[in-house]
Image (cartoon, rainbow, N blue to C red; front, side, top):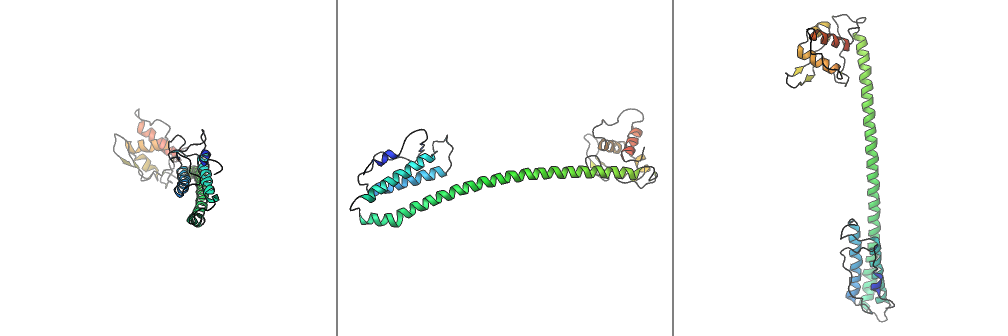
Length: 250
């Protein structure tokens, strides 16, 4: 054995071996079959721990440098055993038929795992991009709904104008600014009975609004204004504001 293979298991801040368990004594010269097998197991343990992806702060973390050192150690032990004149025939046969193909398979598996990790990262990036696109689409749909609601309100109010329809109607339903259509809408007002908003298809239906109904309609059409709730003409004032909101009052 030209050099002590155990010296290949370098130490230092970049060589993190975790819990794979390094050999305490150098292999014999030539290495015994048990030492050859243990060198192979050491490399496989290092690769397995590394692929487990433990964080660098974990005591199970195995760095790439440590994995490479273990494979160098394995290679040195294997070559030392193979170079010895008169190596047992069983070892030569096992080395060619089983061990070397196994090492190649492990290397291929490591490449496949790294490729899979890259694919997963790419998939995560694609999902993140898709989320951004979906959010952008949602914003566009919301904008479209807002624009459509605004057009419906303008068109309906124009149709409800006194120059187009008299007090007997029929008036068109005018959505609230948030897009809700009020006719038949149930309104839950804390501390007051639930209200189902009636149709406002003529002037009489506005005149017949109750206190609670007019309150709910006013709050719906004027969400950023305090509801008219004081004074002797409160109900009349609310009805007038509602008529103006649906376009039947100039």
